[in-house]
Amino acid sequence: MKPAWWMAMASIASALAATRLLDIDADREIVLGMIGPLVAAVATWVLVERTFTGSHPERLTPRMIQAFAAKMVFFAAYVVVMLKVLPVRPIEFVVSFTSYFIALHVIEALCMRRLFARGMEKG
Image (cartoon, rainbow, N blue to C red):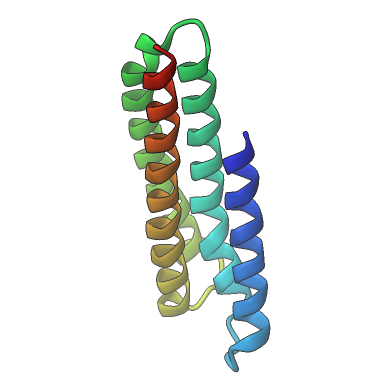
């Protein structure tokens, strides 16, 4: 669960830094671009960690496939709502969304590698 907190705190801190330090008027777009990827990354991490450290780590691959499908639907709906329903500036939103999407997936991958390595040491 600790990586989920780190992802959340790092994302919030970077969004605050970007909205305060950059001399652009895109606070809403930066925060909205962060929220979707952050929610997905934290939910995925919690699912992975609970499944892998639980009594049935062999269930991880099917759950990750299900999570991948759910994330595809979630991200498609999220981006459509942000760009078609809410009055956000598309370029700023897309840059923020893409940046957080990539950064959080890299963090997830590194955390999974560490979790799996620890699991191999125990087993």
